[in-house]
Image 1 (cartoon, one colour):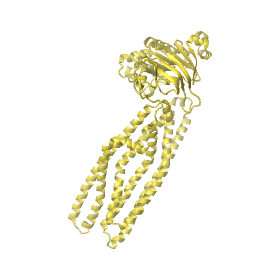
Image 2 (tube, rainbow, N blue to C red):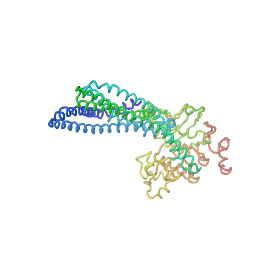
Image 3 (tube, rainbow, N blue to C red):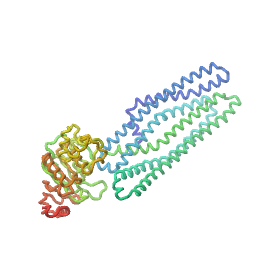
Length: 577
């Protein structure tokens, strides 16, 4: 997966990579040439007391060094550009893929894991690209070139390289093979700590209400301890890597000096050649040591690439139609025909053969006990997930055949949990219609019974909204979410228990305003409160995923025991009448 990821997302940066390779090649060749010039200075200049040769050759070395520095700086610049572009494109691809996931795929991965994969995992692979650009290209050139240049200086000492290089490679390979499993565990445990932290931040009020801070602290400490153990174990193996490399490096240097001294003593080797051979050996082992840096990054990057690949290779269960319908003849009529839905791996379906028609200008209400499948049912309309059997039609066309933009443009969904984005009231209201005027925003706020409290704010429509709308009350948040749907002016309104945070007086005023202002639209209302739906044209009673009764309020009171039980639990006999 790592190779596929690199091939796919580095392809657009090929001009930068070519320039990088050329610059790294020039820089490496300069590094290889310098020890040979240094040997000439010792043997031809110092030994023969030739100051002119020393100065001229030293000048050449200085020019080559300046060229090496310039090439190195330019190579790092191009490598950084390529790595940053890679990270940007991978994050964009993951974000785009997650954006088309249905509720099924999001639930499968979990929000904490998706966040980790988009940030931490991408960063690990991006760091590998950056280090590879600065080290991996030059390392093989230095290693191979160093061997050739060392053999030019003296062949008889080459046996030291034959011993040192395999020993170093084997030692590093053993260490890296031990690090890989720990990096896998570490990334999984980072998911765990993100999950615990997210739960604690989201449910902070519940934690404090039940005085569970010590328990949550202990949970976090446990998750934190798991990450620490994995990171420490991987760190111990990595800490062993550099001492092993330096041990081999220093023993090799000692061997060169020891055996080279005998060669100098018998006159078969010059001091400059021995110095050059030692420098080339250090370059070769240094190149291997640079590769060990990648040995530290590669296991973790491989794990991260696999996790990113899982997201990119997961297709949404809600598949866009191959030949979408871009236009329909109707104006918002919704019909379900024997719609059945079951979650993957579930023993029983959540919805069973649900059939009804919601017409334009009418209000269809859905009521039932907790867990009866009401929210799942309304999620089928905008294709948050698809039916497993049966069909959902809008204006006579199956939603699976409609163009997604057309479908979503016709439906205004107010979810059970009202969510506002960070920004202002105006930016949130314009979420469904960026071209809406201020007058349209105020009109929507008035219908949603939110105009009064917005006018009281000093900034009005420009009043700031924090992430999730946490700086406004639950009732205000719900009314702003309703106003957001109204600004969009869709043909079908779906209110998923969207009036639950409103008092009965505000609820009544809002429903009355909706009937006056958008009464020609199709209304689908999911509610727990009977008072919210008493005036509905059609009420569906949902029980265990089935429609067990339908009719108006008065009809259901006379014919449905289930509905009568719900009514009796909320209203007195006089109120129900």
